[in-house]
Image 1 (cartoon, rainbow, N blue to C red):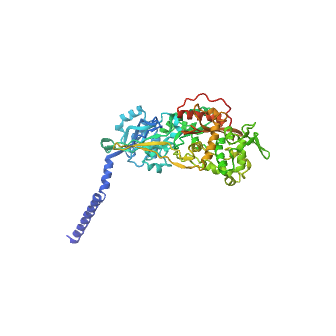
Image 2: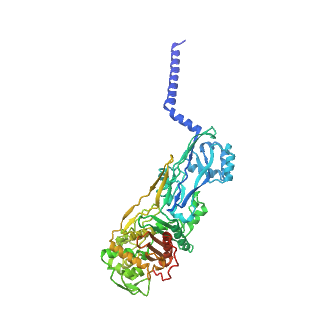
Image 3: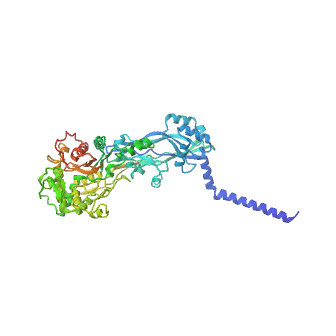
Length: 603
């Protein structure tokens, strides 16, 4: 025998043994933990147990958002996809096509081993049919899951917002809160605000042992989900209802509107309504195409939250700012009297007062009470537009209030000479712009929440609070600990006008809510209040229409509520928006209002 051949064969065998040993060492020592984990995953499945979303209450503890139970079906794609017949069987039992089931899995899955929700709110008949045939459906599980419910429907629609699936636009932000693609998360309103993470809660999980076909045999471990926090809002359900019902009566006539009520002492939102609106229950399980198209095609734009996004000219409700500008600059003497004949002329162009016969000789208080346009035309001509713009900004106009309603609030516009001259199409600033500006028109655009904030600042001595929606948050821990945290009060800034000026302006608003004033029909028995009516003219479809505005706070001493109401194409503010504000104030102060005074509401 050739010893060289023997020796070579021995080397080959030894090399093979060494390679095999090295491979075994690599697999068992280096990759051991990873392979063991893979093995565990192959024989077990982790099923997420999503927590019940936190309850939302109004300021009195009345529930405005809660949960009900629904049946949900999950599949493990890697297991179900092994059999086309089983895949088709599940689709048929769910009442959908194979393609729809495939698209649902593709849209929501992260990997083939994670369970994917393919059926939400499955009917009892379908749930029973699936349960009876689970032995034919490897990788499929079925069980209960909480789902959102809004007892008051449209009443809190824009305020609470709605839920929807995590998608490409918000996946990154929502992942930080524990959401996964396909989960139901807050989209708009309180549900989609900074409270979304607290409302969501913390996932639980159940780990089950499965066989080679993916069928579960026993539970290996389980921990319960932690429910979402209970959020108590600052909102008063009775005031919200008064606002909504008052606005809804006009919306039925094709005249949409909005209303906001704030606590002037800390900026708490007492009510926030926009009508027409929508029922957030329609979005819980995925809004139907018919319902969505109906909302999109409605000319009244029910998806727009007019309370924070409906910016337009406020008309004479702006006169407190014009008055502040004149008094602070010394260009307006509160005792000076101006004669109103009902019209002034800019060249050949007539600018009329809302009272064509004129108001006669009026000082500041009378001009506010009777909403004399000629008085403010003259004051605007004396001041020019820049002081008016400067004090509008001081009162918070032209910038967002910071209310926690993400992606919705608009800043509006406080026009200036420089702003207008930036666009050649607008042309230069002219005298007509100035007099219109002084009575809250021209290019001015404000939101109801900005005007409510301005009114609150007049009531409290000049502080602009950031409107807050949450009074407190109660969180629940896995160990049973419960913690309630009060939400902070935030000051946006000070208006920066003297107390003497504020007193003069408030005196004029008080006169407006007194006998002879344009807001008197909106007064309440036994309650002194300050108010201002507004009627903003706007050209629409080739004709001039009147948008109704109204602001007020009450009581005059120790104010507790500040309100702004607007109704598009409603007419005079005192006749249309004022009664809604009156009902809101009465609801908050627990007053049973008598019939309103029958007087000419005027502007």
